[in-house]
Amino acid sequence: MMARYLYLSAVLILFLPVLGFAQPEAPVDQVNTFDDVACVFDRVINWIFSVLILLAVAFVFIAAYKYLFAAGNPESVKDANKMIMYAAIAMAVALLAWSLPALMEAILGIDFDVPSCNGSEV
Image (cartoon, rainbow, N blue to C red; front, top):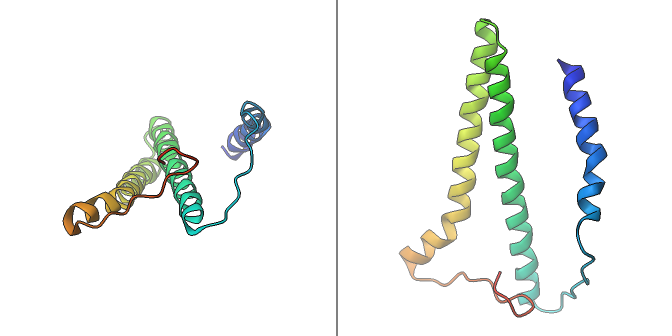
């Protein structure tokens, strides 16, 4: 079982540079003002949120794999159920944390909008 995970990890690591080469070269933005810092912070938070959701979905697939190939082993089924439950909790917490600023804007009437980055709203 561990050999499969190692093989899958090696294949994924092997193909990660291909994804990097697919991106066009972007100019480096200078961070001069607080608005620029807020823009960079917002971009980082959006990337982290995307990665966390993808990881939660990956854990659901791994749990489904464990569940399908449990072969009647109650311990494997129990582990798979725990993984699915934890992945669902992780998705719910991530979505709640991501939507919390909009909820606070609606309740308190405070504007949490990030300033425009390079002329486009983030």
